[in-house]
Length: 487
Ligand SMILES: CC(=O)N[C@H]1[C@@H](OP(=O)(O)OP(=O)(O)OC[C@H]2O[C@@H](n3ccc(=O)[nH]c3=O)[C@H](O)[C@@H]2O)O[C@H](CO)[C@@H](O)[C@@H]1O[C@H](C)C(=O)N[C@@H](C)C(=O)N[C@H](CCC(=O)O)C(=O)O
Ligand SMILES: Nc1ncnc2c1ncn2[C@@H]1O[C@H](COP(=O)(O)OP(=O)(O)OP(=O)(O)O)[C@@H](O)[C@H]1O
Image 1 (cartoon, rainbow, N blue to C red):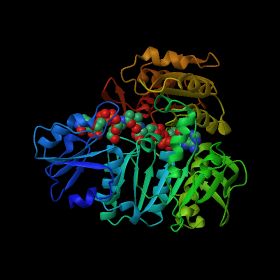
Image 2 (image 1 turned 120 degrees about the horizontal axis):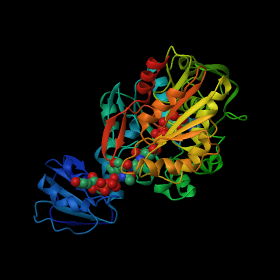
Image 3 (image 1 turned 90 degrees about the horizontal axis):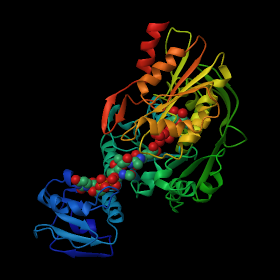
Image 4 (image 1 turned 45 degrees about the vertical axis):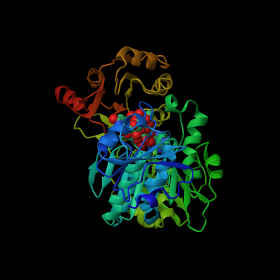
């Protein structure tokens, strides 16, 4: 791309040195820089990209975008000094990649819980309906069935642009993003022209990053305000009417709001809900009429997630009747109230609940078919939001017996994590066992016929991070091993 063209739109800039005629890549990580790259210095949480500019030039960068004049030890690279490199990066990345989001259907889902579930449902429904779609989220980047690992739920701005270009190059018309509050605050999606954005719910999480619920709520709201003001192009906000942030987020956009609810009349309303141990059925009232919905997805929260997915695809232009038909075939989302099949007289589920609200919802989900006890195991990560720990255990107390353990202890001691959790228990039927394998074994060893067992916190993950090493770990496999010994 012509370098002048790339920087044309940035008004406030000082150029030092001679800009090369053309550049071939944009990078914000010195380790990724190749010859003829623009290197953009970003101030991060752990380091400052400005400190890597010289390395980037040694690797072939011919332009450095910076917030201050740098001594690069060479005049081979020009410097473009701007007020904010992250804002500049948004402009040049979108321009460099020719605004792919304007040429695709782009759907974004945000909320504390349910993002992975709703985006996966949307992805499945689109694909099973005969169209192609790409999905970026916690589980990775699913490009036409090939899963590429990604470091974040919402990837950095350059990766985000590249994912859309890759999808477009393969002729995929739909791009679905799982949108984290961190990603919004850090501008990882700046410039992405969403067609439909969807909100699931907001509850206690990530306060180590956002500080207060107000800031956290504001962060999620950015997705709605960023729909913009251009009413010539129809866009839609799909918002959970059962959540207290419904009014606030509705006010943040001038576009049409499509509501959904499990409690009261809304554009998409689920009523007469029947929860069974391997099937959920409910009546759906929708703008296109009433339907009976049957799904293999279990749990109260999945009804809400289904409403979110149906309303999002209705906004995109799909027929509700067709979606309801396809939904019957959609299998459970990996690690989200996913049943572990066994011959033993037990119902075992693996779930990803790691917030107080999700824990409450996971336990409530099995109550309608409880015959004996509900045994619940939950862990939490080390060196992350500690303030939610007692609240997690308080909700876990809804179960008859609770094992409090760790997910990814990182550098924190087992005792520190489980003792924080233990403070929230409201009954004494529980055990504190920091080692997760031992914790799973303990739960399985005390299980009795007709018990319902939920392993929460790890979901689809097949590893545990201890210090900074990933070790293989699977609650499901440990549970099945104990079953083979006991039943
Ligand atoms: C706190 C946070 O959000 N950190 C994110 C941030 O990293 P950072 O600020 O530490 O970056 P840094 O390492 O200081 O580097 C600063 C700059 O120097 C550059 N650099 C660095 C080293 C080097 O050798 N050369 C070089 O050029 C880096 O490329 C970067 O441009 O920018 C990185 C690149 O975009 C992210 O991968 C990283 O996410 C980390 C891994 C993380 O754990 N983030 C969590 C908090 C997060 O974002 N989570 C949400 C999901 C939440 C949920 O819903 O569960 C998510 O979207 O993933
Ligand atoms: N709509 C919902 N309301 C409350 N809890 C939910 C909802 N959907 C899912 N959950 C719970 O949250 C867990 C995580 O679900 P999911 O992965 O879909 O959420 P997420 O927003 O992607 O989470 P994360 O950001 O941590 O990846 C589930 O295993 C379930 O326990």
